[in-house]
Each structure stands twice: as structure tokens, then as C-alpha cells.
Image (cartoon, rainbow, N blue to C red; front, side, top):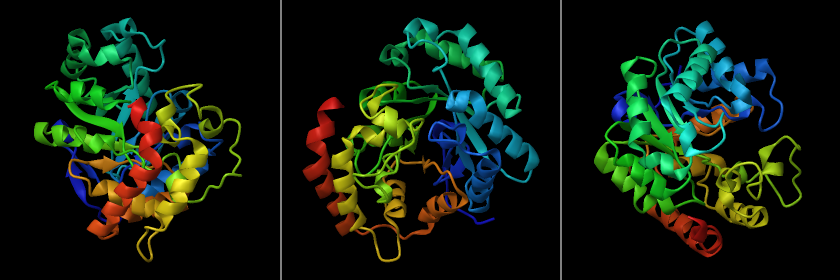
Length: 330
């Protein structure tokens, strides 16, 4: 196995690789993925130095968790920290975020993953009021006391939600959308997390593939792919698909971003490297549907830091092409 840089994931006290493996794709929500291909992706990630898997109980209605559980059972030599999420199996109302439901969701995830105690459970982008509820955090503390989970965290849609969660002493980490097309978290969230000792997990790092530079205005996505059916937030938060950017705007900006890649580096690896070197980031979790993608994602950890000129060019690109469109929604 390749050794990758490790960083402590906030208040968990556990070290994880700076590039993790997101597994939303393995649930089938980006198009069908065969079981053998899913295991190949996980194996390629581990062999490339990845020690952090991120999943959720609703990815493929639990299929992603089940695949990870079976894979790790067959790979006892793989020292992988697994973070899952809960909360999206019920109607998105604050009153559904109670201890009884937490225990039910937790039981299902532990069974899917084949473990007695989850490494980390994250609230899965719940209603905004949930982040301010004392009762919710009391319930999460109970899960820890019952040894159902080792630690808990949150996944958020907005910077305000992130800041509310960071102020809570039991929150180990915050998962938030961060990429060269989504810079708002750099202003307050990352500095606050760094000061509080809270980990930051960067999701949607390639803006749903836009930053790979592989897509054009004529690209057609499968009907079951959220990039086809959720462009305007029809099924869930719009920010989860192309970082909330209009597709045509994103394609044009991605073409310009590709020109910023250092010699020998792909646009995707450049985007991941940009995230890794942001102060306060613990790990970035790109997804993959193939062995080649998993290996390519992991390789970003070995790239040298981007020079200041590239960082300045990313900021300029964002200000010219992206800010006016997406900033007001944040």
C-alpha cells in the first residue's frame, strides 16, 4: 500500500488520509455500479493510501454501507475509518430528529456495516433548526454513551449551519461543500473550525465532475443520475449537484480552470490539491465509479502544493464567473 499524508479528524482524535473515498456513487445514485466494480474502487483506494471512507444510510438505500461492510470484512488488513450519515430516511422535519429515530437508524447502519460501534455518524444535512437544538445533541451524546457511535458530526448545506455546529463541544467534524467553484467556506468556516479543533471534510470537491474538464454542453447524463434530475434542486438541495451552478456556466468555467493545471497534472487532481492545501481542511472525499478514477483521485495527495499564482488565478476565476450566480443563495 502507498502511504498517504494523514491528518487528525477534529475531535475524533483519529488520523485519516487527506484524500478519502466518497461512496455516494457506489449506491447507484449516479447510475448503475456492479458489485465487483464497487469492490474494485474500494480496493484501489485502499492500495493508494486512502484510510477514510464516507457513506450514508440513504446511498442506494443502504447499498453503499453494505458494500463497505462486506469489503472491510474481507480486508482485515485495511485500517479504514468509516464515516456514515443519518437523518434522510424520514420526512425532513425537526421533530423527527429524536433519540428513538437515531437508535433505529443507527441499528440499521451498524448492521449494514457489520460493526458494533460506528466510527463516526454525521447528521445528514437536516433542517436548519436541528443544528441549534439542545435535545438533538443530548441524543447524540446518548449514542456515544451507549457505545453505538464513537463520535458524531454534521454535514451541512450552508456556512451559517456550519458555524452553529462548530460552537457545540461534542461535534467532531463538519462536512461541507468546498471546491474552486465554492469558496465561501474559506471566509469564516475553515478559520472557526481550525480554532475550535473541529475537522473539515470537503465534499462535492469536483462540482459533480465539472472540474474534471470531461463534460461539454452536449453531455447527456443517465436519467437515474442526479446530474440529470436535480439540476434545479428538484429532489434535494441544488448545491449537491454541480455545486449549485448553472450547468452551462459551470462547463465554461471548468474549461478555463483546466488551463490552470500544472504540467503533468489533470484538472481533477489540481482541484483536489487546491482543497487539500486550504488551512483547516482535514480530508477531501471525491467519489469514483472506476478503479482508474479512484487511483487518480488519490494521486492528488502526492502533487506539490500549488503556487500562489495558481491560487490567485482560482480566486479570479471564481470572482468573474461564479460569484455573481451562486453567492446570493449562500
